[in-house]
Image 1 (cartoon, rainbow, N blue to C red):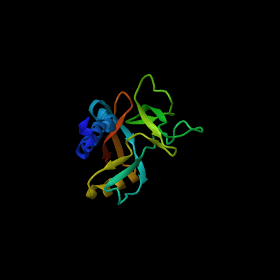
Image 2 (cartoon, one colour):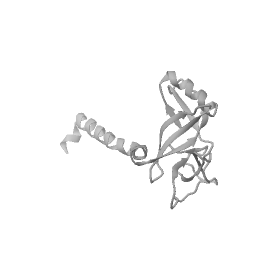
Image 3 (cartoon, rainbow, N blue to C red):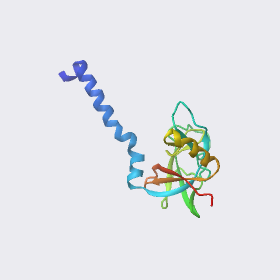
Image 4 (spheres, rainbow, N blue to C red):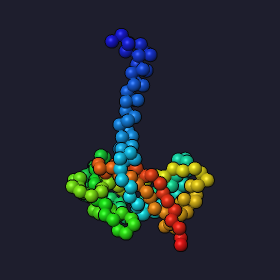
Length: 165
């Protein structure tokens, strides 16, 4: 173990550990993008554009429940499963449950105490397009194209502006 006695050895070990954690951090969204099926969800604005975070649109999903199962509990790492059902062209969420649904598409979300976080809350895009997209979302002319894998991991693929006609 002579390698870990030098500063270079410790830096190398810390680098290897951090590199090993990267796949763990992106496993859910990456799995959804690669193996998930596509669903269209209604979107609404959540926040105005924040100059400190860059060009993005913070999204809310009116068709999904905004809170988990409720009750007095710690929100950290509390997982809720939101079953999805199709209503016309769009998919909407039903009441969150603590158990994974046996069939049908669902979202695996975390309840942070304020709202459910399903990993599809922000849409980053070029600065010149952010304002146009934010306007379309505020006017209700946008839908989110989301990929969801068999474990409920979700990835926001695109936000599309619908024609008014």
